[in-house]
Amino acid sequence: MSLLECRDLHVWFDQTHGGQVHAVNGASFGLDAGQRFGLVGESGCGKTTTILALMGLLPPTASVAGEVRINGTDILCGGEESVRPFRWRDIAMVFQGAMNAFNPMKTVAWQIAEPMVYHGVADRAEARSRASELLELVGIPAAAGKRYPHEFSGGMRQRAAIAMALACEPKILLADEPTTALDVMVQAQVLELLTRLSDELGLALILVTHDLPVVAQTCERAAVMYGGEIVEDGPVADLYHAASHPYTRLLFAATPDLYGEERITTIPGGPPRLDSVIAGCPFRPRCDVPMERCDGEHPTLSITGPDHRAACHRNELQGAK
Image (tube, rainbow, N blue to C red; front, top):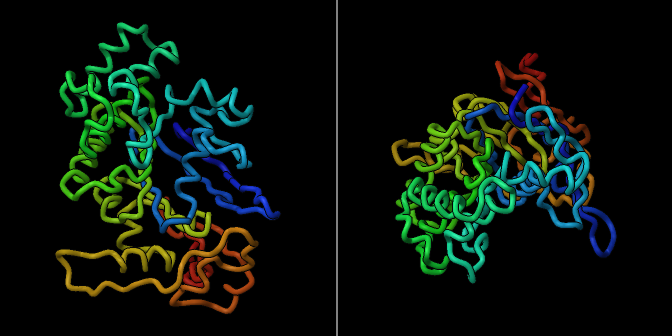
């Protein structure tokens, strides 16, 4: 049994003028203890909505169906009351844009200590001491905890956000594009920190990003999302060297390679609108190898290799079983 199991997750939003936006459509994946898992795809494909749903952090306008299990327990079955005991203690999150995760009126150390007090993990004195230890763990002097978020650089805020997420010693850490708006050197430092913490603390990590080289360097497995669905998942090496879905292959082809000689190719068009039903393959309008059946028949995830699945009709022609 996996540490985290996401089973047939659906998320949709009611629109004020009528109709619905189906942001996530049947996402399923698992995460083992200590494993690093990438969730990749273009903006608007449902990545952030998926991980917010895992923690029950979606707004009231969202409806959620499916199961999210931690060690076999469905944490979403009873709404907020069932997910609250697990949030921050078993599963925590590093939000995109660390400045938005902090209260500008409170010191950084106070905000790292607060979850421990709220969840009964430590009393105030113990929480303050633990906050200092966590700051040191992520490479920030403990004395800096007396500062306010705006007094930190972008990289320091992101490190502090990681420290805050680790406050209650969770088993699972969700990182939503944690290097957004950081310069290249700081990005590398933050990713190295996440990898080191995963190794040292046995943290299971889900890294949400559109940066494929980051996934290749950081994660063992990955899932590719398109149009609110997972269209391919498997070991990162398989996705890189033997992609079974045209979207995955084209994503890698559109990624700059500083050491290669292949030219970058772009993917024409953009992701589909999610406020209407998609009859055939969501990627059909942008695919470079479409088939007639792609227009009206929606592909499902099928096995294409050891621990590797993809949702493409061409896999059936190639004898995938």
